[in-house]
Amino acid sequence: MNFDSELSIKLREYLQFSESYVAQELGISIEYLNDIESGIKPIPKILIDLYAQSLHVRPSYLHALLSSDKRTASTRPINKILKKYFWVIKKLKENEKK
Image (cartoon, rainbow, N blue to C red; front, top):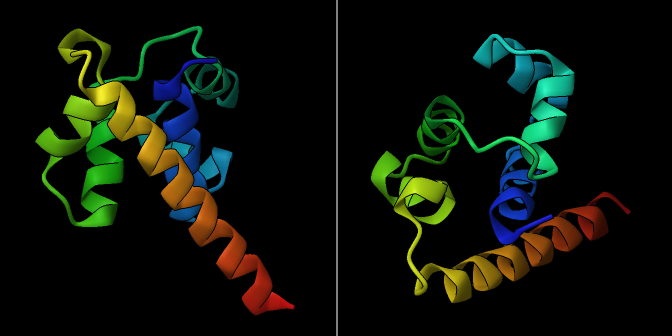
């Protein structure tokens, strides 16, 4: 699994979207979404657009981080930071539920 697919999973979890919801919104199967999230398939533009709209950020920001066709070496550290950021938020939310 690469940083792109890991960050895609973290975004879905942060937004509290189930796999079935995302698959339905994109018109794909859950198996295809699993292939995307495991790094087998590339992250499609429509998925990036869904997350960008849900996060209220410009799609170009997420495209630069998640789209392999726009990959630059400088985005790898950003992916690591965002992964940690979403992990911290997830843990905070888990602690709030306790």
